[in-house]
Amino acid sequence: MSNGVGGSNVSDELQTIRPPASRVDRINKSERDQRVAQLRVLMRKRGVEAVLLTPGSNLRYFAGVPWGQTERLVALIVTADQTVMICPKFEDSALAPVLQIDAAFRYWEEDEDPNALVANVLSELSLKSLAIDPNAPLWLYDRVRKTAQGAEIRNAEPMTTALRARKSTTELALLLEAKQMTLEVHRRAARVLHEGMRASEVRSFIDNAHRAIGADGGNTFCAVQFGEGTSHPHGVPGDPALKEGDLVLIDTGCSVDGYQSDITRTYAFGAPNSEIQRIWNIEKEAQQAAFDAAQPGVACGDVDRAARRVLESYDLGPDYHLPGLPHRTGHGIGLDIHEGPYLVRSDETPLASGMCFSNEPMIVVPGQFGVRLEDHFYMTEEGPEWFTEPQHSYTDPFGNV
Image 1 (cartoon, rainbow, N blue to C red):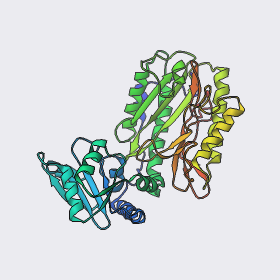
Image 2 (image 1 turned 90 degrees about the horizontal axis):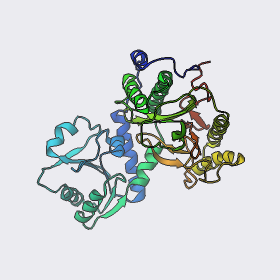
Image 3 (image 1 turned 180 degrees about the vertical axis):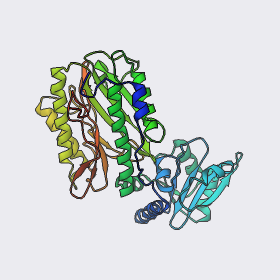
Image 4 (image 1 turned 135 degrees about the vertical axis):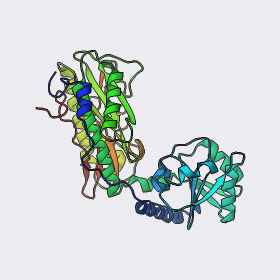
């Protein structure tokens, strides 16, 4: 193999990969306080008296708490002038050190109803409306609705999405660091490929490489597809072995302080295929057309339409018909790998500075192969900027010649 595909081995690549010489700043308390203040502005505009945030990306965004949802209620209630953290009493020593904003704690014991505690807080503060985190589980919504009698229950999604969609300078730096890490892992993954290598071996290498380069743990996800398997956007069950002449599609990402990367590369292993080369070139053209269309004030859906026009000019599609593009052109990215707004025809959100998106108008030829080039861009006042350099070649994916 050549042009950066094959020629090395797992051991050498893991021994030589290193974290960045200097790391970017993390989100500090001051920025989180600003986020809570901005949330309160939107609450006043929407006539919402309180917002309840639950474990997941929204609680992490506003309060810095990196917890996942469990059956025990942990929640932050934000009002016009107070923040109240509700949690099991035995979790206070674990929660307090990671909470990055000021809040009063209200505890519940294992034999008590935490939803009644939420209702009590609302009653004590004479609050009549509550907007709930859109990521809250149904059981929580249902129980709060029943116990907080008299309070209007609403969805906090319009407020949380509006605030999270436009990233700060620090958020952009964290996203860039994560994406640079994943791109370097991609380069090294290509170098360790050899005939007979299983997809699971590639995934294991990528996981270990993400750890070695300094990401938050290993992969947040990883899809490795060979040959005909590339025609299935998210892969199929099994553990195929790489063969000479296969198309390779690897889609993976990591996180830095919770901020995500998500990059896909598609390239030849061995002798190139002329039809795959043709489709690869169309994919590249569609990706560039989407990037060029992403101008300030343009609707997200128009970016998707720009990519599809390219495909239709080559008799691919139309719409979601195959051969063609079976899914949206891109998604927002931040603390969630997939978050709003989206580059899909139904999303008319105007593009604005600070918004960040994947750009991945995949082309699927059913039963044969698929090509996906996925890179991310962020919006500035002047237009889009790439986070990392897109792939330039089907046979030389990382510019080794």
